[in-house]
Image: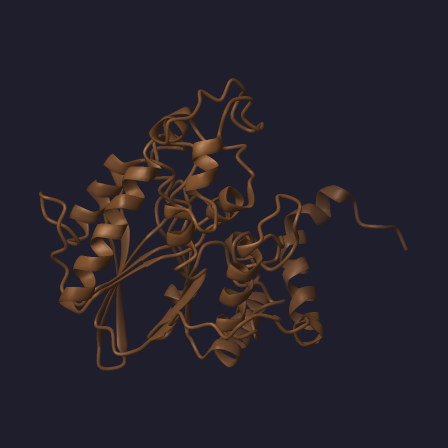
Length: 323
């Protein structure tokens, strides 16, 4: 029998890959070794939240981030928290490309304290660029970011390691540095009500792993960072990198995945950044798969600032896109 041509296979490869991984997922999930580390104490599951606002990748654009926060009624004109008991989820990739990631982190630190006093919560999730930076991979750090810490200019094109002094920048993002330790005080994944949030996606390989185990694994890896290290945080199928759910999947494959997600995590919805949606926030499968990276940063595609809002009445969620 003649083999299928590459041109015929190419459109269905993403779906085939996800289907194969779903079929093997239970085997690989049980085969993964347990994380050998101290008991994790950072909460990653929250219930009874009436309003959630989620914003995707920032990539160093403080001005557009502030615009999104105002649009979504999180801050006032003075930059102060006005959202009461709302949970704000920022799905990672604050860092790299744009110049003002330090200003974004400083603002998030301020909002964390203000939200806590108001009964709300800020979840600044670890994305692949936060992981890369702490691990020492600075290929995408911008001149503006380096300058904010007294280093640079990089002297090489973005996409290559800087050929300049980065000593102060590295110190700030070391596991015990001001910004490195702040990042490590957060999760890679959080579950709020019936929704799970992360940067990249929860692949079939990891869909039945405990969220607390995955969060603990990412932080444990970054306590002793290495650019060449391999683990949950650097795995292509891991929650910081996986893009399979952003592909065009056949309906049976998608529904099989959602059943595994519900069984493994007790949720009905997954929200992710990482993969730019050039037409804005994408709601798929009746709002059960949501992609919120709109390329907001002017150093990516400059997409319109926007956010996902999830409002709960009883046990019913109402999803809306604010833009």
